[in-house]
Length: 84
Image (cartoon, rainbow, N blue to C red; front, top):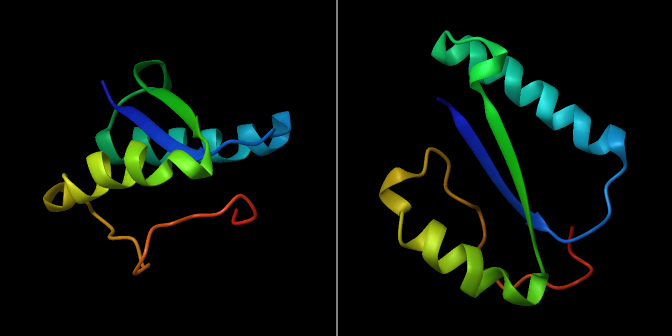
C-alpha cells in the first residue's frame, strides 16, 4: 500500500541526497496512512529535461490536474538542462 513516485530531472545524486527525501517521505506517509514502514514503496524516475513536457507534464500533470493536491507554479513548462 502507499506507493510514492517522483519524477526528477536526470542527474547524479549522492546517497545522502537520495536518502533525505526518502526518509522524510516514509515518515510522512506512515503517519498519514497509519501504516508501517514495510508497506511503503518509493520510486524515483529520472527524466531528461528535453523530455519533461512530453513525458511528465502533459500525461501526468495536465491530464490528471483534477488529482493534483498541489498545482505547479509555472506558466510554460519548458525546462532547460541548467534548471534544477
